[in-house]
Every structure is written in structure tokens, then in C-alpha cells.
Length: 208
Length: 199
Image (cartoon, rainbow over all chains, first blue to last red; front, side, top):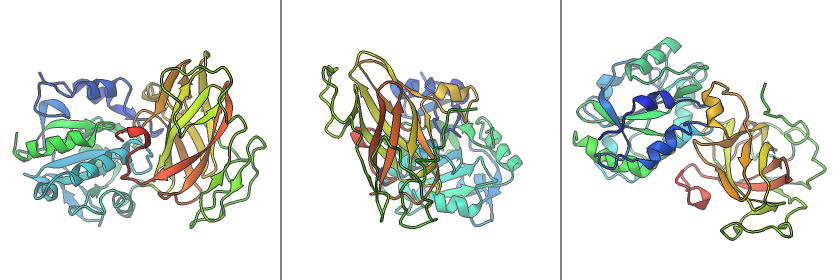
């Protein structure tokens, strides 16, 4: 049986501005039930989520067509903001840790995309400075995307995560993992172990 | 609006960043003796109630070697992860209560931050009180932790750059046990958390 993310999509909508994130209700359930009969250690999605299509602005100020840039590649997508002491940096640090434990060539195939929910503050340079804290030793740098409020809200809607509120500081706590078949079957919430992601990456790379 | 606190007396105290904006002078709370670190975010201080209260009964485990005791409480495994953001960080810790009465971590002050607040109740934040500070209950004979994604002490308006290897003073105020000053290490973004936590 797959664990359903539907409930988590609601529970995972947490107020991260005060930066105590993932809800008490969501986290224990997730960590306690790592899909014992499932393929993945992350939280399995039902139904599978297709890779979304949206275009935002990358850290260099250039258009970034998410679907075109990441198509066919294992891709991690997270919505957050840099002025966040807890969940957002924890998520990105965990992602980096998982990739450090992932062998090549897979490690360099994985795209990590961070979309700000606070575009007023998170300009390209701000995103770049923040993301470089996590990936300095990784061959494939994390991608930070920004845009107008309407654009980042549209991206969240396209990814089927709850659209952030409170100037982007209350946002989805899910990190979606898309496979080479361009579907996400699994997601992660803050507090999950980097080992779970490391375990699942080779599976989605095979289109499992 | 919230019980978050700024502390004009403590906030500017003596955490002199190696680089960054100048640090205003300030006053030191009389209850604690703060030794200013000139070159770094160094503070050496101890609360006077640094020994276990006589008669306190250990619950299950021996007191952690790195713990700091105030009344019936022992605070240990405190750390701040080096922030990726230039002006906001989070402190995490564990508190054990060997007493027979419940206590509560109601507020905190950090000299390295202009504003310090305890956020221990994610349920309240889900209800929309995203800016509210929420105290950490410490039940009798129990151990509670602030861990990533579950709760933290938020440090805002940092007075300087926090780097791995720095030490930051953090004053905790408990309703019953009173206040205790910790020397909290700043660990690197990739370092494992003290006490074996996974994040």
C-alpha cells in the first residue's frame, strides 16, 4: 500500500516563517512509516505527479524552463525562502549530504532546484549566495529560481503543492523527486534522513 | 502580539563579530557574569546554580557530561548550525527535567542576535500564528528537545557572521528553574548534530 500524500499536502503546509516547520502531525507519521512495503523510503505519492511546466528566472537573470532543463533527469524540486533558519536550510543541507553519498555518474545527473516563495527578498544573487553554502563541493550546482509573485505561485500550482502564503513564509514542506520518466512518485519532508533520499535516487534514475 | 522578546540589555552584549557591522555597547544582565570575547563570538560564563540541586533524582539516564544544570533541569547538546542566511539562525538543544514539577522554557536571549524567540509549538504555527513565539514545556521527569523542523530558538538580526567554531552565549529563562547561560557552539552546515540527531 502506498502512503498517501494527499493528507500531507495539507499537513505539510506549515508556517515556516517562525521556522518551526513540519507539523507535529505530519512528521512522526512519515518518519514512523517509511513505506514498509513500498519501493521507496521517502513518502510515496498517489497519484504520481507529472513533471511540471513553468519558466522562472535563474540566478544569472536568464529564463529557466524547468520542464525543458530537467526533462529525463532525476530532479529534486523544493519551494522555500532564504530568510528561514530551520526547514529550508535543513532540507538543502540534507539534499547535499545525500548527493555526497551518491556515486557518479548519477550524482551529476541529479538536478536540484530551489524555487523561492519570497521573490521580493530572494533575488538571483541572494539565492546564489545562499545555495553555495550547501553545494560547494558538489559537481552539479543547485539551481535557484525566482520571478514575480504570480510566477512563483503559478509554479507551485503546476507542481501541485500548496501555494505559499504570508509573503512566501508559509509554504509547502515537501521536496518532490522526479524520475527519468518525468513523474514524481516520492517526496520528502524536512526531518527525513538524507539516507532515505540517497536510497531512492538510484531507483528513480532507473524509472522505477 | 507575541511573546518574542528583544532584549536591549543583553542583545548587544559583547559578541564581537570578526567581521561585519560594529557592535553597539550594552549592558550585561546582573544575574550572569559575561566575559566578553574580543576577537570572536566568545563568551565564558556560568550561572551560579551550576550544580545539581540536592535531592534531585535522576530519571533514567546519567546526566550528560556536557550538560549545564539549573535547578532540576539539565540542558545539553545545544548547538547552532552555521546559517546559510546572513541574518537568521536557529539554536537547538535538549532539556532534561529530573524534578517532580513541570517547567517551561519561556524565553531566551542571545547576544549575537537582535531578536531571540522560542518556537516550540508547530501546531500553533499551523493555525496561522506564524510570528508567534511559543514556549517549550518541560514536563516532570522528562526529556524534551528542540530539533530541526520540530522547534528551535530563532536568532534574528544577527550582529555578525556566525562561523563554525564560534561560540555564542545563549541565556535561557525557565519559569521555575530560573535562568541559565549556555556557551553554544556553532557547527558547520554539514556537521552532524550533537547527540546523534540526524539533522
